[in-house]
Length: 455
Image (spheres, rainbow, N blue to C red):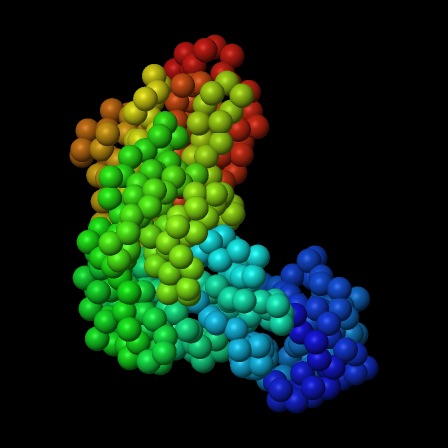
């Protein structure tokens, strides 16, 4: 938390104080509806919403113009927030455990925060950019033992900038995929950007790298720090993976010749790699393997709409993974719904919407996802923008492919056609807001005709 007079904050961020020199005693925040007592309201003048208009009643404000509340006025609010956060990291001298990757960041971050315990301050949801990282840092206190930071990038130089704010002690690169490839311009550019995280380490740090991803493994040459790998045949590895009826993995986790059992509580085969990455980071931070395994086994889902499995009163299973999507995470979710349906009498139904930020790979990426749906009983495609998913699904012989006009049409189809023994996956990029389909399906009553609605 921040414990500074506004005048001192003004000096740190190179701003000008307008109004009373109040003492800030709380965290920084962006949403005026979630005001922190004694905190610092960060007023951003965005394209659609100007935060300065909501500053009334704030204890203190960091903004680009004066408000009715005591305000530090700066030229660039984002840069100023970063300066304040950088000072906080330096003052507290708290270890920073940072991770990046094209997918799996949030799940790995949640595992790691749970393993490290109450002494860790971690990124909330996926607040992983030039605003979210400083906001997370500014929640730290003198009692904080670790800062667990998810770091995202939309281009070259972004991670280098975030590492200037919060220099990592332990840095993990999880994978290099095609998420945001449209913004980067290619997978090699994504790899170049992700590697900035381990380049920021000094010789006293630890680089945690995915040995199963060639682009990530090659980053060992880009860091001065010792390297700890995770993967199927790595420093931190797994073996003998099995799944229960809800698609939750059991496996042995190994390091330095010692093996311990792990039983995860979250659905999906991809959770094994996420858990192993978190384990490697925790081991680098000094936690013992047995403790890490035990804590992984008690970790529940924290972030909403990520492989969120719910059973309706009549037995219908809904897998809500609607927070975001890219080709790799789509494939992981399809693997999960197939696994969930393996021991059930009903069908597997995948409700799939558009993946954003694929650039020139938009059509091919969507078709590949449709092809990856082989073995699923029904694919419901949400909107014409995702239409290539339908093409791919038909090409691999998915028994039923339904192309709907949009979210409402898809929700109506699923509501009428999903039966008690079925498993329904809902997934797309954030902009599609398909979590509404999942909540509608869970809130609604099962079909009164026993599922005989015409298809």
